[in-house]
Amino acid sequence: MISLYAPPSRGLRALALALLLGASAPALAQTVSLDPLTIATPEGGALTLSKVEATDTNLTRDELAKLFNKDAPAAEKRAIAKKAKAARLSLGDVVSEAKDQRFVVKGLEARGVDSGRIARLSFTGAESTFRNEQGDGKLAINGLTVDGLDLSHLMAAAETGQFADGALKIDRIAFDGFEGSVPDSKTPKDAAGGNLTRVKLGSMSLDASYAGDIPTKTAFALRSLVIQPAPASELATSLKGAGLSQLEMGMTFSGTYDTAAKTYSADDITLSLAQLGSVGLKAELAGVEPVLFTGDKAQRTAAAMSLAFSGLTVRVVNGGGVEKALAFAAASQNKSMAAFQAETAGMAGQIIPALLGGTASAASTGAAVAAFVSNPKSLTVTAKPKAGPLSLVEAAALGDPMAVVQRLAITAVSEGAAAPAPKAGAAAAPSAAPAPKVAQAAPAAGKLTGLAALNAVIGNTVSGKNADGDAGVWFYDKKGAVKQLVDDEITVGKWAIKGEKICEEYPEDDEETCYTVDVSGNVATFADEDGNGRRYTIAAGNAKNL
Image (cartoon, rainbow, N blue to C red; front, side, top):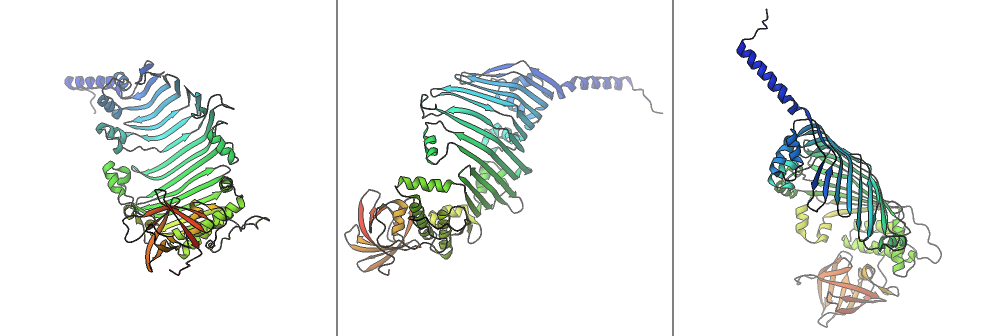
C-alpha cells in the first residue's frame, strides 16, 4: 500500500519548495511592462517609446527598465540582454525627434527572444520627415519582417569591443518598400519644376540557409527602385540626353557555398535598368575555408590569403542602352552615330586582341566585341585561369594587370543577329568575322584622341626623332611588344594601354613612360606626363620589317 504520509520535517520542506517555485514562476514566465519612456539623445533630441512590454519573459521589471536606461552600465545591460528571454517584446510606436527631423516606427515588436536570438522582428510601417536649407523631405516606409535574427555573436564581440569579430545571421528579410521625396542639394528650391527627387522601392527580400553558422545559400532581390530626379537637376539633364525621364532598376544575387569542396559560387549578380538593359555576373572562388565565415578578424584575414579565382562570366544584354551611349558619344564628337559606331567597333576589334596578347582566342574575343558594338543584342565574356585556380595573393603579387590577363583564357560570344545592311551614306559596320584590319597609313582627316588615336598607332609603325634627337622607327605590334630601331640597333620593349595612355618600358628602363597620343592625318603626337610632345609619321603595318 502506498503511503501518503510524510514525516513532519519532509512535509515542511516540500511545502517550502512549492512556495518557492510558486514565487519564482512569474520571474521565469511573466509579463512585465514599463510606462512610456522618453530618452534624451546625444544630438539634443528625444526618443520616445509608447509601450515597453515583455510577455512570458525571464526578466524582472527592474532588469527591463535597465535595458532602456541610457545611464545604466553597459556591461550590466549586455549581461541582461544576453540572458533575456521573452515570447514577445513590444515597443509600440517609436518616435525619434530632433531639430528639423522626425522619424516614427509603428508597431515595432520582437517575437521569440532568446539570449540574443530573435525569431521574428517586425514593424508595420514607418514615416520620416526632415527639413534643411534645400527644402522639405519625406519618406513613407512600408512593413518590414526579419526572421531568424541572431545577434549572439555580435553581443559576444561587444564584450571585448571587437565588433569586427562578430557575425550577424539572418534567415529571411521581407521589406515592402518605400516611397518619398528628397530635395536635390545642387538644385535651387525655386528652380523650374522644384528641386525634389522622387524615389520609390517596390520591395526587397533576402533568404539564407546555414550549416551551423556558415551560410550555404543566399538569395537577394531588389525590385523596382525608381528614381525620378528634380526636373532642373544635373541628373535629369543627363537622363534627358539619353531619352529618359527616370531611372528604374532592379538587382538580384544568389550565392552557394560548398562546405566539402570549399568553393563559393556567385551564381547570379544581375543589375537591370529599364530601357537600358542588364549586366549579369557569375564568379567562382576556390580555397574558401569555413573560418572565413565564422572566425574572428585575424582568422578571417588569414583565411582570405588562401582564396583563389576559378572563373568569371559577364553577360551584357542590351535593352537600348548601347544605342543611347553611342549616340551621346557621337554627338559629343560631332559625328554621326553610324560613323562613330563603326569606328568604335573597329577600335574594339583591334585594341582588344592587342591587350589580350594577339592570340587566336584574343582575335575572336575582339571580333565578338566588335560585332556586339555593330549590332548590340547581347555579349557574354568568360575568363578562366589557364592552369587551375589562380591565387588572389599571387595575382596581386604580379603587379601588372596585363600579367594577370596573360594567366587567363578569355573568350567572348556575341549573340546578336547579323547586322542589317547599312543605310545609304552610312559608314559600314565591321562584321563579326575576323577582327578589323589595322588603320591605313593615312588615317581619316580630323583629329583623333584617346583610344581612337591609339587605334591608329597599334599595329603600325611611327618614325621621327627621340628625346636625344636621334632618328628612329618604332613598331607597335598587336601582342604588346614595341620594337625600336635607332642607329641600326633594334631594342624590344613592351607597351600597355592604361586609361587613355600608352605606356612603354624597355629592358634598360627603371620604370615605364606613359604618353597621351593625338593623331591628325598621318601625324601622331606623343606627349609625356609633363606635357612635352614629339611628332611622328605613321606608316601602315611593320613598315621596316622589325
